[in-house]
Image (cartoon, rainbow, N blue to C red; front, side, top):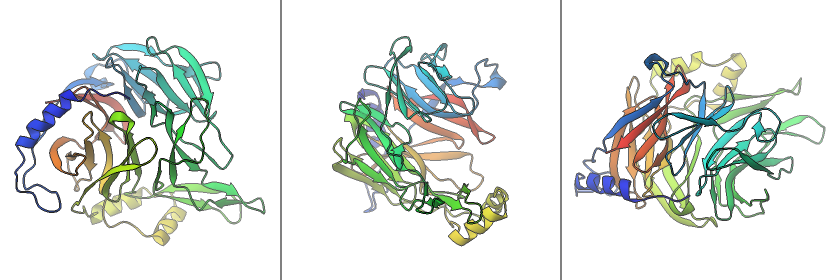
Length: 380
């Protein structure tokens, strides 16, 4: 993926001038330059009269033209809009014919603007034309029955970069389902024929959740964990892979062969979960079994160090920090490759950035627990 470094580099150099020169050993400046972002586009706002609406947005991609590609999961669809927000075309469609899909999880725009989509049920990468988004071909990614691809992160010269994960439930010697002991993500390069070898670019801890098999029936289930720590990754300039886990702001940066180039780290003040927040989380437990399993596991006393991050064109990471109870905005801490804080941006707490490109930040806005709007900001 190619990046134009100039717009955000200039912005962040300006932000650096506002940062106090007295740095503590932790890397936390006594003052941090505020990076201003202003909303320039919004898609899917029914209250504003938008006729194009979204159900549950899972991924966004942006190509070199500034087209915005929106993937939804509740009502599976992928739609493209131009840089001004006008609808351009659907990409593929639901079905089992050429170019169609049943369920997708991941969409990326390649260096030449080809669109790559991960189709879950068939283990396929679907490839669409960079100009009119028509279907070009598909590639089936190898799956040994134990481990398989679970998404698509990006594409480099050697192929796609994809997370590979063991299925959490595997049949034991007696035929009964058991919980697999190792479900961590292995990030691998997958060649354009869909094959990958033994080389692993990175290993990232699995998202926090509870995998459970019922002893009597042999059935199985997955339960969520309140304030879970989750895996996060992104592709940055020069096809560098950034990855981390939500318990600490420690982001590794690796090149295409998996060699660690640097580790971006930042000491954060823990955000404690209040009694009211813990009670609200307890109300979301689906049944007594869920409550029992969580009690046996133990509950978090603090929120994750961060919720997610994105990488800008200069290779800086924008980290969405956890917020205190009843906060209406969330801070996005901007760290450079040397772990220095070069700025901070404040956004509505229900906004999650997905892509930063050509001086614009693209994200989704949540309403009633679902991401249903696309928001675009100019980074000033």
